[in-house]
Length: 219
Ligand code: SAM
Image 1 (cartoon, rainbow, N blue to C red):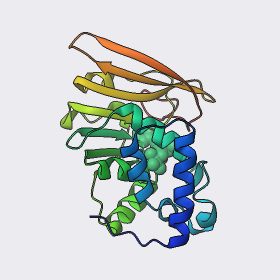
Image 2: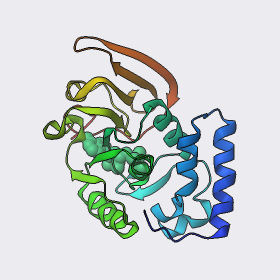
Image 3: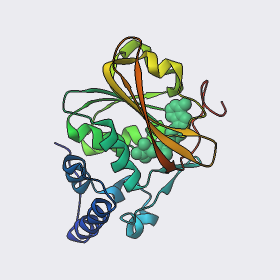
């Protein structure tokens, strides 16, 4: 079990945040319950402590952001992740989303492009007693040595769906990825129903930091 230092004040703010996310239409109670347990302020610079339970993204350094809580809840719900699933996350960032997936009971593999963020987040999660498999590198190439994955979640905006990620999706597997231009993306849910066939659904409209790397916007 993770060890978080929390307070009644933060718990109260978090309850209000979860209520507002539920009112915006998130119905996956398991996801909401896990998010209600995680002190988001601990994943942010202490300068943001009082704002951490507002439903918005915040800077985490290196020009990157922790995603808005509603977006984390939306992506995680779309992913239909279950305990025991092998999950690949592209864009570890602050480690918050990886923690959500880990507390649902998934086997989490998460890749971060920025070395400084990778190092900082690795230390932070270890302090909480949370140990997903963390990697530094270009997640647009996936993680072939660990494939196939039951679930793949991309937390940066991509210009296209990277072929490598589709190849690394198990049959029955689900890939959730924001795809569009640099400003706006639609959220795609791609389900591999057979070796040849992929089902596709799209949900408007999100705004993520750009995916970098071989299948991203820039290297
Ligand atoms: N999931 C993160 C969290 O819970 O804090 C939020 C991620 S932030 C919106 C997007 C992250 O994707 C950034 O940390 C960025 O450095 C990372 N990123 C961008 N391109 C990447 C790539 N090709 N491979 C791995 N990480 C990438």
